[in-house]
Amino acid sequence: MKPTQTVLETRDLTKIYNGTPVVDKLNLTIEEGEIFGFLGPNGAGKTTAILMILGLTEPSSGEVSVFGYNSTREPLRVKRITSYLPENVGFYEDLTAWENLFYITRLNNIPEKEAKVGIEEILSLVGLSKVKNLEVGKFSKGMKQRLGLGTVFVKKPKFAILDEPTTGIDPQGVEEILNLIIKANREENITIFLCSHLLYQVQKICSKIGIFSKGKMVALGSLDEISKKILTEKSNRLEISFDNTQDTARLVESIKKLDGVLRVEKRAEDISLEKIYTKYFQEGS
Image (cartoon, rainbow, N blue to C red; front, side, top):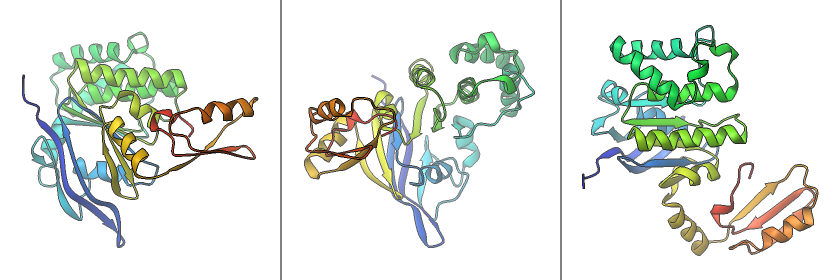
């Protein structure tokens, strides 16, 4: 069996703004072929960590390397093998999907003949072949997210960083995006770094998860390992709000029957749970 290669390694990676650590001594290792879930609430410092990984901002202290290249001293080498999808994707909306992808290949010095073949493959992968000649300004949000993934994969990267790739997409579109990520990982052998604040999405496709809060990695491992740690170490309180729930009483009784739930309280329209198994988190929680 081919030995796995370390794709990402951070050692006490720290970023301080105005005396406050936004990323505080982050230690993380990701191996080739993994889909890693970087999970945390908005404002936790996830994007700042990503910018240091990409060499787009310098750490205050510590080190980060991608495939052995130091992101601070060798940012161009890192960028050649890494693709990044920001949360808010921008396109030339008066250009077609094909033209936007072709522009990306030109920026990355991919030979034209190779680029044209690759673009067709990527359009098929992300399900946009039938609309490749449509101006992107006429695309739906979900179609733009698919094209965003296309701009990532058309570079044929070894490592892809995806920052909240399902933002603003309907549930069916979310499933399609997650399936595309799995497909790219398996068929194109792209190691994935998925940044999200939605646990149910991360648990669905990630082999390893890091929970990031207030600049610190508070838990790291597989979902089962993290779940067992949470359940054995302390009680946790989770508050959930439900919209348009017709039968709240039945819902409360159903939640009480879940493994790990100690108590359920109903307050107005809110239901609070203590110590719940992480596998029961859902979008909107």
